[in-house]
View (cartoon, rainbow, N blue to C red):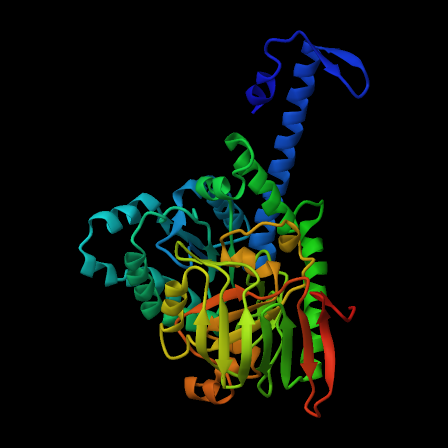
Length: 458
């Protein structure tokens, strides 16, 4: 890094400051730059350690003698490129008393080789051992850390039909794992971290050698760890989210009305619905934070009582493909019309995945002023992008968002209004122009969000 800074000065013996009209000797510039880089490096290590501390101690809330599995939610494993970062997490986990830490790795070149050379009909095959391992960890009360980090362009030259085949195989086979996640059998969290291809996509406007550094800095910002006490900072943040969720739960709204550009939809809410935030409690009484970052409060809609139309406010990126400027029309909870400027085939693939994929399982409220929204970037990553705006999820509902839902049978959960599916795909609908109103049982309408921001203080 020092060499990069010095490159501009290699043929000078002094530097002129136009602001102060000073001439600074080159040797003083070198000393200054070395100290500056040293300071930057120290800050990086500090914030990285803060991030890892929040992940292990606050989000996972890893308990002594718990086992920990580290894997990816949507593909074979975590990028080998993140080895240094993951080794630090493993070290921290053992320091906190972990009994055993397992890591599932991946190399994207292996998946590219599969698309290039494997028999077409073999793409429908699925590696069950990975998801079954995660299921066993959750069933035994062990912790699971999902790391969602991928190069958005890694599959850009792959035939979309091939991507669709493996995607449908994923949806078909991952439902048992998603069901166990939704029941909060144990403490789990989904996080992310920069990798090269992703950094190049997001920061293409700056020199390549600075892209990952810039991404890490932004990651620390949106994950709220650029401070001296990240655990306390997260306590305060989660407390605010919890209070908003508790306020909305007490209101017992029968429905929400969302209105904004291209959106006019009424979303019914079931009896006994609960507004949750990032902080939840698993069946063993362990409090955990399911997503880092998180800016949302959310609940489940009544799967049979959604009417109107909704338009995305940001593109949806999933499985290597992009869907832009799409609009969904609902009648009695089911999607009856789909339009999109780009990616309509992917959208139809998602919607037609199974019986519940054409209905919604989550409505989440996020203020337009969230740190992710304020960054002005599309991250091509659902975990992060969903925290930029209020959003809706196609597919399964979290059972904990209905009172007693975690102990209901599938039929009981559906009868209560909850949706079951093998997918859970969030898409953003919030903006500075979105208004959200709550409808009380007596028909009274109360504002919840106006122009993308909360109308009530906590």
